[in-house]
Image (cartoon, rainbow over all chains, first blue to last red; front, top):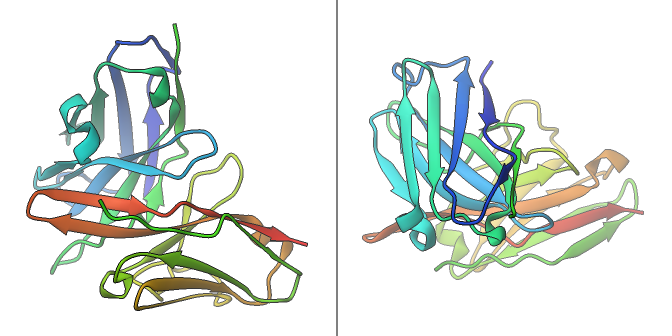
Length: 124
Length: 110
């Protein structure tokens, strides 16, 4: 069974850097062909995709936040890490990590497994 | 950037059929995915690639996609179907990759 779990600070100050960790269980990031995305959802709003990283280390970022985001993975720990710089109160949201499944011929474009999410509040 | 538009709310009586639309420019050329989100919970995939269901999702959930509109249909609506629903597509070009979510529809069961 595939599970994902987010961890990180619940409160960050404006201008600080947010670092979130997604721990994946049930699949090996090094052996399984898959991707992990970070998605955030401000209170009462729709989800917003932020970034993804695949097992072959392919990365992509949403255009509007590209300069502030860095995604990486530690396959030995089965973790995917997202760093977001220069946090602002508008970045207050629940942050999710989610899996993108792949087959031998390609990867899907939907998110089949999600973590429970972690609420991050940006406030001084 | 690509925009997906959904009606803010849909109300339906138990046992009836709910239809949730997702509008986008030539969305029929893209694969559309649908998520159900209940309060305080993470989204759950209910339909992918326009009309496929993940294992464990009831057959009451179905999808279609053509032209500029994709539709999620919930047949024989139950009280437990009350939730927010989001459509999602993958939009890519030479200079960007983007997973786009719709604006969301709140389904209320009367």
